Length: 143
Length: 155
Image: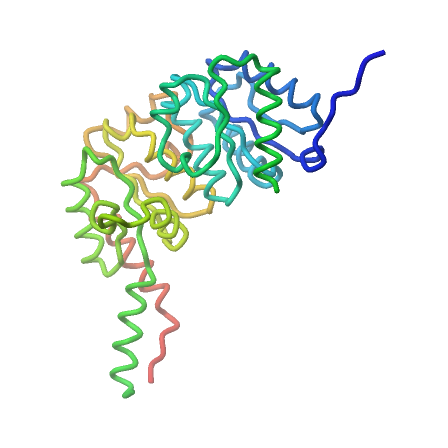
């Protein structure tokens, strides 16, 4: 019999927006699955192109419906205009942000506003292990 | 307080209330300062981080407060801005708060912006003016300030 994954008392209903670069899509997909198994509702763009109207509409919908934002910061995504824009939009709307650092360089080069948020160091972690830490960080942020 | 003094006080406050946030790359500081001066001449207040923030200020807190308080954000889009992480976070924050965003191009053309697939669509949809056409924006800004001030007391 399959065991049901444990979900934290605070985050079992949390709606999370996962912001990431298309280059980190594989990690993002695995993290999304792992977080969903922990009872979180995760919303992300997958590998869709983020320059069109539908992207803006979707960011706007996310701003209205999610509780907080998890942002995957890698050497690529830290320079991504879309990821930085999405992060700014969440901060601008007063949403909490949980940065997940996928490399030491990303941590060093993360834009200053992100330093205000407690992040998760996931440089050597598999998405499943990282999901556990991210879920805890979400629980802390939502408290 | 006399009527004259009241109107003077009101005009001063009105100027202060119409805050324009000027977002730019630190590599374009000098140009940004000149633009900030023109915005002030148009009777708005301009928040420019290199001018407004002194040593010891809580950088993030001040910028967040200015973003919330501003009525519009002008972004000086230059080749340096395309690589600036911070400017895109500021743009996202302003967009998330529903602020008017005014791009002014310097060292880039509207055609180059349109052709770049990695530039968010809201920038492309905006009126893309070069810095040489900043007077048009400043005229519009003056008109918005006047419109905002229509309810001022006459007596």
